[in-house]
Length: 212
Image (tube, rainbow, N blue to C red; front, side, top):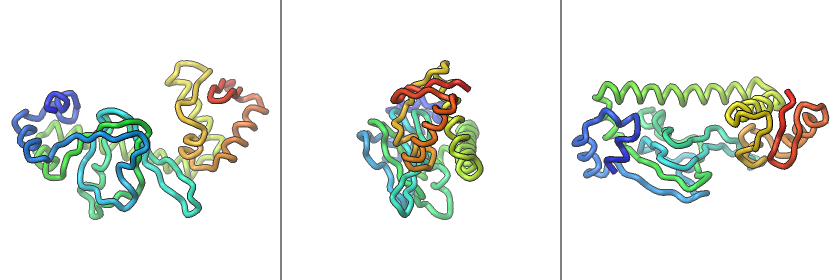
């Protein structure tokens, strides 16, 4: 486990004996989760800072009508729970589940408090908090200010950049894309059809060609 910790940038400057002490006291531990497993449910207490070692997770909210909206996606190297661990309320406001088999490092508040005495750990910790905050701000802006068309085209352009091609393959299902955009599937399908009819995109199942 110590070798795994050394590969994580957040822990790279910590002393091995300090980490071993925390491991021996079960303040640092690794757990495996299966695809589809709920890691946290809304209103669960946050007791650890978690680092994704492998796999992917999503944080989503449920409306009163039962529709889901994806708020965050977490992949290898990202952290969750840090903004809740030291807050006035230690409660998860969202549900978090695994989109694939995942492996998480759990770090208790006691261990984090000890590690924060290390300057480099603190700087990296603050940087990761800032990154998560920026993701939240972006999501709020997307939901509150942009139209479905704007958000959908932005997502497709981002995928075009990531895949280095004007012809992209959606990395998620259209149901998951609708959840990510905060809309019902029929609304997403209607917008995709409009964009296709107007010549902005070509669509074939999960393959989309951008003409814009």
